[in-house]
Image (cartoon, rainbow, N blue to C red; front, side, top):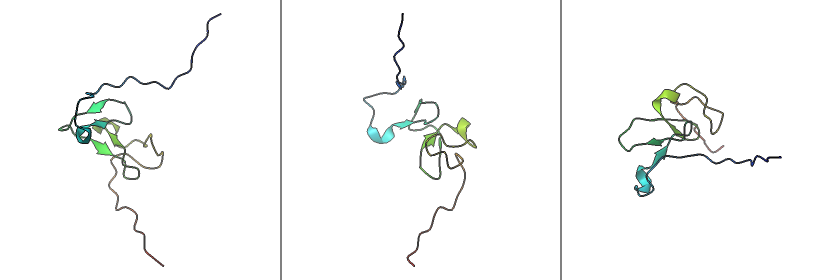
Length: 78
């Protein structure tokens, strides 16, 4: 009888010696986005994605369209 071990492990390809400010990871494909590469982001949670994910629902928050232009939320005191 063989057992399968459950895991949420993902193989991520990035340079561990890179400057932390330059490291961006696509939330959809778990691939590195270079410091000079184009990317799109979720207007709600700020997750970054490769341009091929533009127009899809954000995997992180499940609330907003990736790459959509929004005005944001304006909070005022009552």
